[in-house]
Image (cartoon, rainbow, N blue to C red; front, top):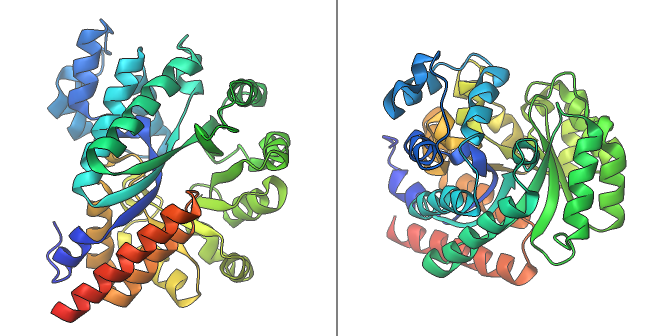
Length: 353
């Protein structure tokens, strides 16, 4: 919990999350429980897997994105059935509800499962069940974004895209868009430009991780060569003033993940992130949790960490919350409802101040 006077305000502020990897919300406790249920042997040579507590402690010592991904893919190995994927996603939605999330657009990595012999349809079945439960139990609306693992062959990504398309998952709204994640450096976005071009012709929403490990050119190439409509992470945008001006003018939302960027050594301290720079230059961004079970910070933790580092005003937080909603991929009616709730909350808070 942050120690600033705005903590109660931030806690109750309605939130929209757009950069959350469902597989990255796999808590050590659930990981161990599913491993036992599914008879999955965890690595015996790594002392981190002695207990949930020791695994959580190891998560505090990530040295890089690839170090994190090593544990991330081991975590995936315990997910075998639709029930497992439902449990995973519902655990996230439960926590998100407690943090004030009213809408979430969540990533999932089907290749991390199909390469293990788990059918794509099984993955989606579990996640959509959890989505339905979360909307019924908490009123949280949500959208799935299918991510391609950029370190795997492009043909593998193309096969997954075609399977999802053939099942009608894009046309019927089961999946709202596509994304690009995993190791960034050395795997430029243009490798996937043909898939993105096809997605554009089908009016499928498009985003990509860019400017986290890679330099600002990964951002410009994602926009120019892949036609993305959002940028995930995007912290290197501040290194290119002309590109930053363009992103601001075109109202391209940047989905920032502050605690993640510190944990993966993208920056030394949270205060090194370009949050003030983005605010001063009109760049729209949202605050998100990325892989919270691995980085020790869900969305409320990220809001608090940003507030402690930058001391933002109520007006600035209101703008961030509204930008997240305006940059979301939900239906216009849902956007209007959420924007109204933000306005009502800000008016009520100002009246009580």
